[in-house]
Image 1 (cartoon, rainbow, N blue to C red):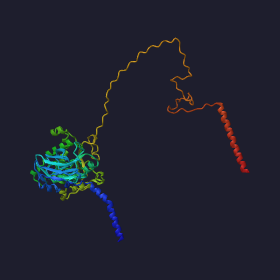
Image 2 (tube, one colour):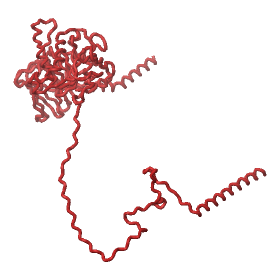
Image 3 (cartoon, rainbow, N blue to C red):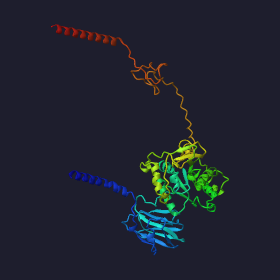
Image 4 (cartoon, rainbow, N blue to C red):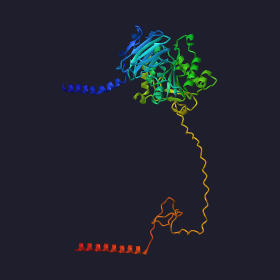
Length: 502
């Protein structure tokens, strides 16, 4: 019984010690402060239920001119204002105010699936207004500082220059077949890139695409092309709504706009034979040449100019093979490898779990880390970015040219005054004695003979050696000293022998 009590005490102690770790982990997540706010939905009674149920399928329609007003007190640490839209906002205004009612911000919301607004520290209220069109709002929430939960993510605006594009036909294709490129090249190695989703299907799948892309490590806005998602079993008439020429034109414009040196796309055979996968793969390859053709699409040519992609990699292509390391720990993900990152990301596609797909690595039918270069202007190498000119990357900074020297006017030299002629002496001055050095004479140190300058065989950098003059007095003194020393030594030896004998 005593032993059991000791074990219980030890376990409780361990839990108490671990409590700070659990609280630290929890503190990373942003706290939902919506209940701490006062929200006026403009008299729409069903709004509160529909925008707080965490379901994108349910939403509230607000007619044109309607306003949603939020406010919070000083002790509420509101940091994010978040909105999820069933249909993307077009003509929706946002205004922010401080405690005194002074306007801090006024502007129109961008057309994004989710809107995340970082609130000014002194903001105390907000107004969301449907200016001249209705708005369909799926979720409205206020959060404190920390990591936002799905479906909200603090995306960075996609820059005008990218290092790579990943082209996926459907949301989840990017994870199942191409996901290693994003986690390794984007998140871990820092290349700038984005994911292009050709079809979007339902609003739920758009939200799942964003959640999955964020889990892969993508931090720039995903790109949605909004082509229809059509089942393989659909009729020929229905399939004709997916127009190949429009898809090809979209890819050329993307290549020209974002200027990626490297593109990753899907299998020539559509992985498991999906017809839309095949057309996506075909267009990604054909756009390689057309984006660099000044005769194709004058509109994007005028806006962005031509662009030559350096490498196009296709999933599972058998030539110029690129096998990405799916097993090594990635620092960006706290040591998790690319395969497990992709598995976590695929779980974000909740609507697709029923189909039985899984992320495969290294082998199997559709390993997500095997590619081959089908088109290129440079040799493939062993890495996707091998042999890519650094000037084509987003990280390239042109060298700063040296400053141009500013010419200065050189002042004209002042002419020397005409010397006044000295009077001719009537008697020549006495010559300077040669024993007295003049100002130009060099006095050598006393211990160095003036004749001891380095000889032709001596190195110019070797110091001159010292020599002493041998006069007779010095020689006699040295000789007498030697004799005295010898007498003293011999006398000492004799005395020592006498002592021993006695």
